Amino acid sequence: MLNALLDILLPRLCLLCASDAEDDGLCAGCAALLSEKKIGPPVCSVCGEPFPDSAGPDRECGACIGKAPPFISARSAYLYEGAVQDAVHRLKYAGEVGLARPLGRLLSRLPMPLIPHRVVPVPLHPKRIRERGFNQSLLLARALCKGLGLPLARAGLERTRDTEKQTGLGADERKKNVAGAFRVRKPGSFRGMRVLLIDDVYTTGATIRECARALRKDGAEVMALTLARARRL
Ligand SMILES: [Zn+2]
Ligand SMILES: [Zn+2]
Image (cartoon, rainbow, N blue to C red; front, side):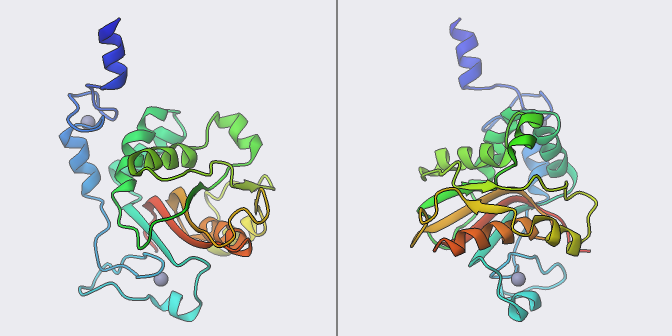
């Protein structure tokens, strides 16, 4: 009984490969595989896009100089490839919800320019939650909030339309697909607040931007963190 309880509290096996876990549910090998995909500087100081073939300090990318995004900063921990992509797939599509805790902890290690007043996960439509059984962004946000002692507004935003899956859509289609799909559940609840948006993957940024627009309309200043980011083609 006590051992069973301890196993729940202190998982001893790696959640990704079932060898002995060292830190927070991952073994040293899997932690190393994930860290190979870590996004390092320099990145765009606004949208977090990595500058793959250059050195030097963070600076604004051409896209952000051309048109300021609706958030003040967005950052992603890892490139969405290899072990990181596998881990996200296992969390999202295989329902391995135990992975949310170590992945959320990794996310919480990213530097934030300012301390947020509220942490808000990108919401799923109720129909999608019924299909999947959980919102992976909420699980990541919860782990991050626990680790950092930040307040979670779990249902701060809602998805008003059951949008098509973004997978396989181009940048313009993605933008159209999520246009106007989000709203603040209680208008005025984020007025004057700094809000940290959490999502699993940043692909073209269409979803994060649309959520940020809804929060900004409500009077919030928005920052965003995502676990992974797709490499721009
Ligand atoms: Zn492992
Ligand atoms: Zn940028």
